[in-house]
Length: 299
Length: 270
Image 1 (cartoon, chains in turn orange, green):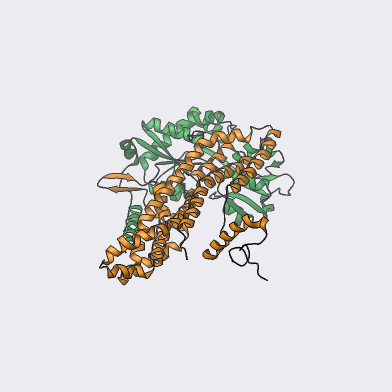
Image 2: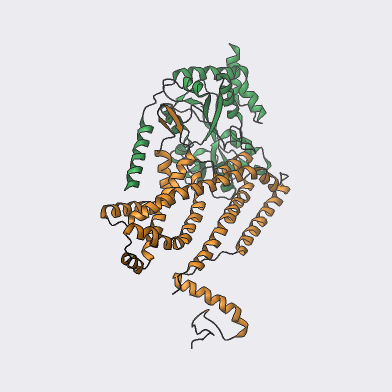
């Protein structure tokens, strides 16, 4: 027998007659509605999760601290604090890399995405190919290509313009971003009901005007959540640059560990970096969810 | 399409610039003109090259590099390198000089110009828990052994002694893996292992086998830089004569190794 809720929705979390469950039922119902729209259960991160993560790390550090004290060594927290300024600089560098490659990737991706909806088949096909190629290539492989194929300096007109690794890393990371943004743009344009195109045409807008004045403004809010999602993923991927020798936070962490020559620092140190990334990416994830809710298409 | 054209052009341009032979006649001239010498050093190998809390490069080799800059009357710039990329950087011309704990081997001499005389030396040994039943290199067969990526003895350990090699990028990862029992021994430079064995944490561990491949370390310049080679050669001789390297070993808490003592005696005698 089906349980009918106050609003007549059926199924799990869809409502209840039991007064004590009413507040939760409302929330669960909203959630299951969203999940039905999404077609998949959504991962929900809460402030609680961060608290758990921190608690775990504090416990572990405390345990390692006690061991260090027993072995008559310098406490871990002091050793760690000494390196925090340096490591934090490295972390800021990661953020800089992520922001710049996102900016570059977005500009290129929007161009590529608009090319994908071009009426000219060669442009449409070639941009489709580039998009698919970079979207389906491993990020690290692209990074390797950029680091080792691009020169370390450019000699032009008798000048030496250095071309440091971190700029190459930005270029390398912006390629997959470009391809993903291209798909986001194409998808958003395609999601606008065809009635909009037809209406614009009947009002004598040409194609250019239709795209820039009618379609794209409606796309922006649809593109924002996936774009922010992509940014969060990119931020977490910036640590890949450590493999190709950019002095970002992971590279520095490894050097710090080598300078300290004590391996009980390993897990607290990496744990600290983990928390930094979480603290940075979590608000972005929350904001994305909020925007998704706000801009959700009401059917 | 624009994108493809641009990226293809960029890549082609890149290949052209990387592939082009060095147009500069002499790196010494280039260094003086620039006013800076770019030195490849290690930033992850205490005490030879590591980071200070403010991010500055310290250690025996950065000090030697600073000395070279001083002798040339120029500034210095450090580029941290690892075993896997140091020779490529020198070949590309990204660094002018490499002082990066590199063992002098015939294979490497073909790639870069290793300056004589050598400035340091180390051998290969194992760090293993006592009582695991390894007393000779041949006992490593089919055992999981930790190593550092890019070390020249990795191949030998794997092919000749038949060990299952697990290679990491940094020593901290290896030491953790060793303590967790993911591998039974760590094959590395004996100077590093000796330093660990003096710490109470490693009291249960030992160097169970004889040191092999005791080979000198060489600093290197790019092939074809004969002037710079001659200059560096004199600098190293002077380091040995004045006992600078021994003094640095003492400063950084290493017992002076037999090699540096022998070189000091040899060069100060004549």
